[in-house]
Length: 253
Ligand code: OAD
Ligand code: ZN
Image 1 (spheres, helix red, strand yellow):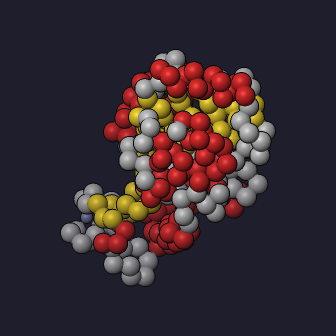
Image 2 (tube, protein in one colour):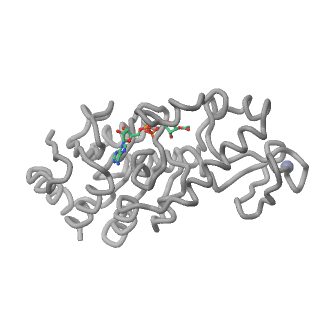
Image 3 (cartoon, rainbow, N blue to C red):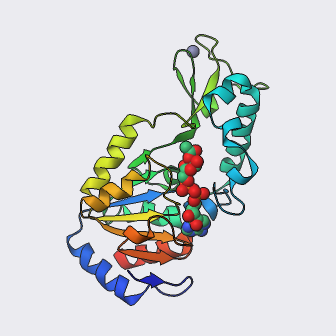
């Protein structure tokens, strides 16, 4: 395991090994979490300014809370949508998108902020949903954000009048099976797996880098601090995703 310090050129040893891997690597996967969007101004969940320090997940991010007080939960997601809409993809998201020109890249993300897509990535598995999509809790009709007439409080389904909720995974809910299965397959087939800006403690999402590891993929973590995954990683590069990922792009191109 070797480390790069923030703000300096990537460690020579890592660079050498990464270049060697690139000779034969066919598929690369990026497993991302809230930390990749931190430099876009979107709060992470844990840590000192984390969302879960200020908000109780059981009052907002679960189905019972929504049924008890749909307007409150909807309002909170509207607030998060406003933040996401004002945010722009950062140099980290953009570097991953640009890598598609050179390599077979899959993105498996825990983020709901849609920033990978806005940055131009095309092969994305969204394990926790997407804040731009919504669906009716009664008939499961899907609504994209602009289609919803935003009246005060939670919108109602145009077909059946049911409550419309954001298509995000709440506590106690299953992950979208197609997205998880697709992400797991991409992990198992990958030659190199970057794990970026995630505490890697929320399961089942955190099985993704473990599947890659078990399949023999080269695991490279990018984070500002050590995580649960650090001991499994071949390399941990400590620094900001928005600074390190462009350096990775420079090595590849
Ligand atoms: P966390 O908030 O748990 O972790 C964010 C990680 O990003 C931490 O390890 C930070 O050290 C790191 N980080 C912060 N800024 C960074 C930067 N500029 N560059 C690189 N790394 C940085 O967020 P997640 O791991 O995404 O689930 O959390 C996983 C899940 O827990 C979320 O998807 C959400 C939450 O409950 C659901 O809502 C279902
Ligand atoms: Zn409906």
